[in-house]
Length: 176
Image 1 (cartoon, rainbow, N blue to C red):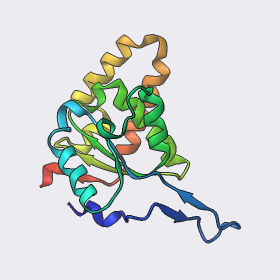
Image 2: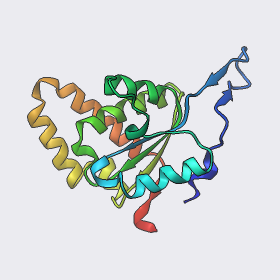
Image 3: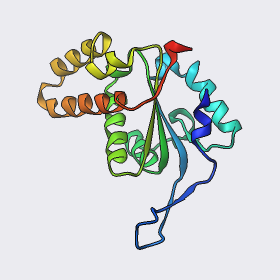
Image 4: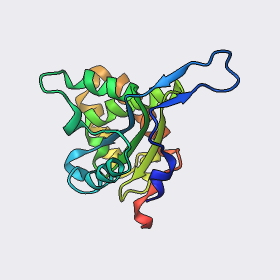
């Protein structure tokens, strides 16, 4: 995968030349991996993580960097905010996880603040099914809407985030 050509190993980046200050953004991680663990953790995600590590790219993956005894959502939120790139591995059941969708909404929020670049990987799913929320994505959102009636605003935020990520040029593994 030509993904690694997009990322360097430096953990700082300069502000744009048009800005009046010469501030530097420090990143704790080069890459934050977002994925549905049950589907890809021991296969694709593990291989990608290993390849990134071999290239010297400091990568956050939830099962290794989470400090025991911490609140997971706070730790993940901090890792997202301190990452330069987010590789979002969208698999068939990604949208069935409220955890993944909450994480994705935060990733998109950071992207919109120009603090994070999203690199989507469509793990054997049609990007248009993700974008238009058809098939398993439609089913997942129907279940979320049924179960989370009192927090329907969250579900709508997740829908918007998923659509935004699906509109970003990424890698479609069906073509491999």
